Image (cartoon, rainbow, N blue to C red; front, side):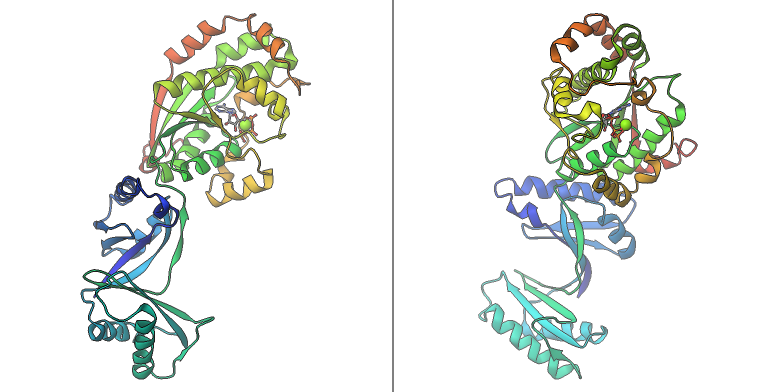
Length: 394
Ligand code: ATP
Ligand code: MG
């Protein structure tokens, strides 16, 4: 009998024609996440097994991988003979503390003559005979023993842990996350990764109006996302010239609307270059003046690429709850200025008029400014291991 880690797929198993693609990606992602450990992975259309000797560390890493519905310690018995299977199970259960139990059997090997229900009853009877003071409880057992008769072996497990769910990162292509140092955008990024989207990130800075601390905050948040995304490329755009031009030339109530239209335009160009199919951001309906439906629509008009807003319909408290779960909250609330916060007008327009946006934009040479910002932009690859390299920044 071999002790292994069992992975159950959940939603992935509904992918009929593409299932092999999803499973191969899940295996690759697990191997990347476990590259520091000695592991071997085997899988079929129903189950994946990790062979290792380092159970506690591997289990910790598995918790952060999307595409896993449930996981647990399991045992593989190299036999489908009832006697042999029963002997192994009884030895295993003798070392486990419980008073009541239930057996649930699956039988993918149809060569076995007994039905699943018969097998459960037979095995339950043997357990009662061999281990004293136990009772069967079919409604609320202390221990639910799962027994799966497979082609050449039998799988046993009785304690499953919930995985993160979602799809393996990368299976749904790439997206570009507009990542500020705030609370909302890292959560938006996390939710997009959950649906299988591999992220790159873009950050707009305005030195000297924004500080290095503000940028380091974004690196730190990126590192948190890298945990789920395998690694993450962060595009740093110097936005100073564009913001100053907007500030000097455009009526102040439209500062934010025009600034965001510029951010969208730059993001769309970078996305296109990097083969990212969508932009992702942390906008939430009604949260600030630039996130009313009229504002979002006036801003969105600047680009053709689809914009996904994973937290659009979440309350701030719901967003904060996820930020705490993924450990970005404490970093996000550090009080460094963002390029959106430094040029804030007293009375930003709540219902911007698209015609006015187009008119005001003519007051600055924005195409040239955008060209320069992109020409000089920097890309930094953040991996979860880079904590040491960046430790002075974090
Ligand atoms: P967040 O909490 O994510 O900063 P927010 O509520 O502060 O969001 P805004 O500042 O209006 O809202 O920004 C809305 C979205 O625009 C952000 O969630 C983020 O996706 C993007 N964004 C804002 N500022 C920047 C920036 N400096 N660099 C990259 N993206 C940004
Ligand atoms: Mg912000």
